Image 1 (cartoon, chains in turn orange, cyan):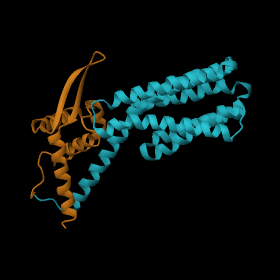
Image 2 (cartoon, chains in turn brown, blue):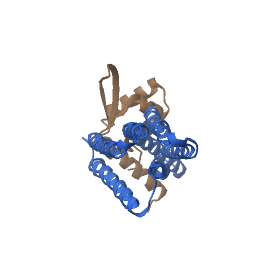
Image 3 (cartoon, each protein chain N blue to C red):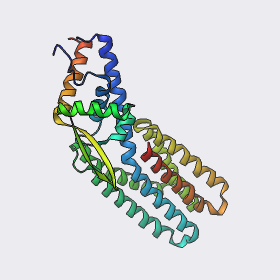
Image 4 (cartoon, each protein chain N blue to C red):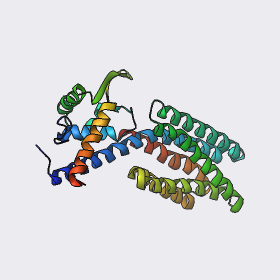
Length: 97
Length: 185
C-alpha cells in the first residue's frame, strides 16, 4: 500500500476505529460512550461515523432502551480488516524490513 | 500523501492510547453488575451475622451460592454473541470462583481463626485481589481494593462487637458504590 486508507486516516475517525477495535468482536458501543472516549462533539462525531458507515467500516443501530432512544456503533468485519491493514501500513513505515 | 515515520509513530501511539482507554471502560462496565451482586451478598451476610450469629454459616453458604450463580449467569449473558475469547470469560469466571473457594477451604484447614478474624480475613483477601487486578485492568479496581481494606481495618479495630454490622454497611457499601462508579465512568 503506497497511500494510507483515507477513510481511516483522519484524527477523529482513527480514534473511533481504535476505540471499537479494542472491544470484543461484534460488541456495540453506545454513541454517548464513544463520544466521551474520543472526546468529540456530538455533531462532529455523527458526521465521521456517517463517513465510516458509508465505507461499510462500522454498523450503526438505533433502538429504544428504557424508553430512551439509543444509538450503538460496532465495527464490521470489513472495518476490522481495513483497520488492521492500516496499522500494518504504519508499522511498515517504521520498520520497512 | 505518504506518511513520515514521525507521523506513523504518533498515529500508532494514538491508536494504542485510545484502544487502551476504550478497553478499560469496557471492563469497568462489564464488572459493574458483578460488584453490585457481591455488595448485596456482603451486606446481607454480614447483617445476618450481626443480628443472628447462629445463622451465620447457613446465611453465608446460601449467599455465596446465590452470588456465584448470579455472577456466572451474568457472565454467560455478557458473553453471548461475542467472539470465542469473550465466550471464554464465563468458564474463567467460574474457575476463579472455584479457585477462591479452594483457597479459603485450604486456609480454613491451615489457620485457626476466630469468627471475627474470618470476617476480616476474607474481605482483606478480596481487597488485595482487587488491588492487584486493578494494576492490569484499571486503577478504579485498585482504588476499590484500598478503600475496602481501609474499611475492614477501621472496623476491625474500632467497631467493637458490631464489626459485622460495620462490614454490612462499609464492606457491602464500598462494593455497591464501586458498582455505580464503574457504570457511570
